Structure formats: C-alpha cells, structure tokens
Amino acid sequence: MALDVLSIGSAVPQTLVSQEDALTIAQTILGPDGEDREWLGKVYAGCGIGRRHFSVHGQVVKDILSGTNESNSPFLPRKQFPAGPTTKERMDHYEEFAGPLAMQATQSALADSAVDPKSIRQLITVSCTGFFSPGVDQHLIREVPLSPEVERTHVGFMGCHGALNGIRAAHGLASLCPGEPVLMVAGEHCSLHNHYLWEKEKLVANALFGDGAAAMVLRQSIGHPAEPSTGLRLAGSASCIVPNSTDLMTWKVGDNGFTMTLSPRIPALVRRTLPGWITGFLAEHGLTPADIKAWAVHPGG
Image (cartoon, rainbow, N blue to C red; front, side):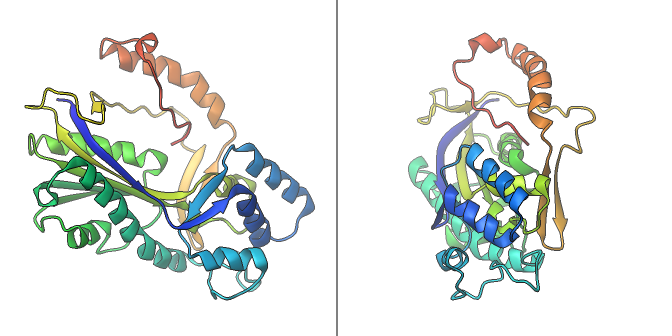
C-alpha cells in the first residue's frame, strides 16, 4: 500500500556561516601547515556550497574568526586539547540543540498538514549525529504536545540515508494504523563533529555537511485515493549493499566526536553499480529510467 506525504517541515539553527568563513574556521582550528592549507582551500572551494548552518551559538563563530574568547566554548581551538572538544562536550551541545530544532520542523509540518497532533499514532525519529535519553522523541511528546501513548521508534547511526530508512519504517508502521497519521522527524548536527587534526579523509566531511531538521506527516493511502496536496506518494523502496565497499565510507564514535572517512573511490563505484540496480528496481514497478521525469540524487550514504 502506498504512503502519502501530507506535509513536510524543516528548520535550521540560527548560526549561519558562509563557506569562506567555514574555511577560515577550519584553518584556524587545524593550525598552520602550508601544503595542507592549500589542499583544504581547494576542497572547500570545489564542493559547491555557499553557506551552512551550525549548531553552536553565534558568539563561538565570532570568537574563532576574531581570535577572542567571549564564549569560553570547548569548540574554540585550545593548544592543550589539539583534537578539539571531547565526545561528551559535543553531546552536551547536541542535547541542547536537537530537541528544539526538531520541534520547529515538527510544528511546521503539523501546521501544513492540518493534522491534530494528538491523533499521531506512530513517531519515528532519525539521527546519526548524537544520542541522549530521554531523547528527542520525548521532547516532542512533551512540547508539541503529542499523545503520551504515541508509539516511538528511533532510527540511529545510519548516516546520510537515515531519513530514507525512517520513511521506510513509517511505511511499515502505518499499516498498523490504516488511515491515521504517522510523524517522522530527522535531525542532524554534523558541525558538532568537525575534525580538528590534519587527516585528509576525515577533513572532507568538515567542508560538506551542515545542520538541520526535517519532519514529515505521512498516512497510508488506503481510503484516500486523491493525490496528497504535496503531490508526493511513496510507492515503494529498496536497498542494495555493494560487495567489498564497507570500508569506503565510515562513521564511528571516537574520543573527540564522531569521525567520518570518505574514500575518493565512491563516485566511480556509484557510477558503475547504480544503473543496473536502479533499472531492476524500476522494472518491478513497471517502469524504466526513461519514464522518470525527475531525479533526486544524494551521491553518498
């Protein structure tokens, strides 16, 4: 049974950083190294990003850029702590920002859907950039508020495709309450895990990812033949792991935040393996790639 997307809401942290300032921040926290600084500048300039939102208070960014210490933040470069904030310090910031940002996205989605929050039967939360308990789900139940009897599922540490797995989970859970709304909320705070040491495979992530949250109100299509107002309906999903590829992209908990490695081999691997697999998936639904009018592609995860 298809799943209708009734509404989508999104939110970003208040602190906005241009890519030029993000490069200056990276160069400041990493320290001097002529050859690597040139390489880093090329990475930041070449990724096509203009600006990003960071889950830190604005004064922290001002301090790093100006060399001041008004914020006294653990995210400022400190000679005695060259690897940057500890994982605990980063998780403290995650706990501060994750709930409120998820709340903003949820309020936006619920307002557009005209769904009574207390009618939500299933709540799915998604994140790979932090954990705490009681978590974001209970923050939403208390603050929206949702029903205290809403059933909760968390999709954690699944990286860039976590929200897609959250939607897939919503698809399955919606069958438990046909015709009733399901809420999926995803929030990522990647800036909290900026790497502070000169390790190239781990520094690429610093140049790419920003912070934000998104929420979707979904409902099984049964009894609702009309297309939803968003024009979006989930007809099916699938997943495929490419053999001998698990070392190309990793995301692990370290002593100083979560660390990512990205291999430069990933684009060639995607280019080589995706067409055959996607053609087979579409064929299961009576379609070919030529039938698809638009594609939304994320070349990672």
